[in-house]
Image (cartoon, rainbow, N blue to C red; front, side, top):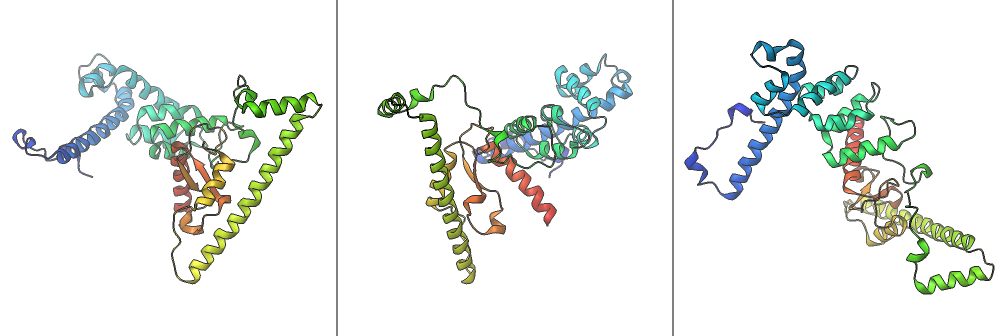
Length: 306
């Protein structure tokens, strides 16, 4: 990476000769280095405060020192000092702060779930996850009984404690087809237990889905074996039949039960590079944020195995 202080900036006149793509690239380059320098400056502030260096250099306060030298707000200064104290027994998070590897805003988001036991894992996640995914990660960690388990992988889509919450003010009957509503009400008038009827129908539906899933899984494994026998590489494209099965099972939302966001990607919970097949038992529709979290976890696991 180019050193911040050794970038060869074009002269004023040469700016006019740049293409749009070159100009945009230069803006991105300068912006990246500016953000990096800002994080590193903020990381120095706790030590500057301890040494009272700001006073030695003629500044009335650490806030004035940061504002005049780097345009850092009072809020960010105070946040950096608070986090440095909070991370006293969390060396990895403290290093992420003082080295400027992670922004104070990101570190503030993970501070509430950090412990001396999980702080290394939390620091790694804060470094690699984008802001939106990090917020989801923190929310998921808080929802887990016992609060934090640093070795926890993605929430199991089959665990009852992760049931998707259903708003209590929704009248499900009102969302049914009019003819279906009448049918159910007529059956109830006849003394038929419609609750049990619906439970039986749902159970039958689940059993059919499970049967279809196992059939598709066998076909996926058989196809993978056949391709390997002929020295061919399997396609990463997930067959339409498997996509339909996943949508029948999970709907259109993220398969993490605590999440209500639309699913954007079908994730291989067993790395495709290793499994070489599309077994639906190891596929999960995920939203953008949970997909980022899943790949971060996968990458760490893969690195350890390698």
